[in-house]
Amino acid sequence: MQISGFLIFIASIGISRWLNETAYKKLDSEQKLRLMDGFSGARAYAMIPLLVLIAAYVLLMSNKSLNRQWVTGGYFVCLFVYLAIRFVLTQIKLTKLDLPKDYQLKFNIGQAISFAGIAWMIYTCM
Image 1 (cartoon, helix red, strand yellow):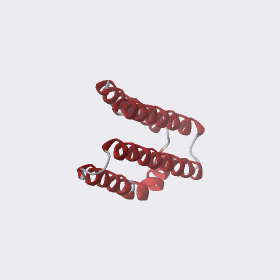
Image 2 (tube, rainbow, N blue to C red):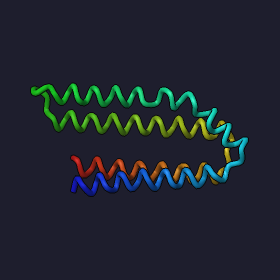
Image 3 (cartoon, rainbow, N blue to C red):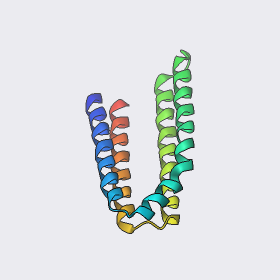
């Protein structure tokens, strides 16, 4: 079952990226520039909390006295919270950038597909 989780996760990422790319191609040059400028700072720092979370997980998993199921469960809860916060911040930014509703809808559908893939992968790993 873990293999199905991984395969669905990979497929969901691919579908999400495809949706985002098709929506991006429909933006005019000015909208594309606003989008890239609006998220340039976020891209630079978005991976730092994720890397810290992964490092903490690896460190805690190496501690033999801790229950591995609890550590893994806590990791996935923290990962979900991180993704939810990123989703909310992205929605706020997209609204401020005043991008077309069609772009925002396809972006949101892509995000939902990605989250569903992550959720299935987490379910199959637990």
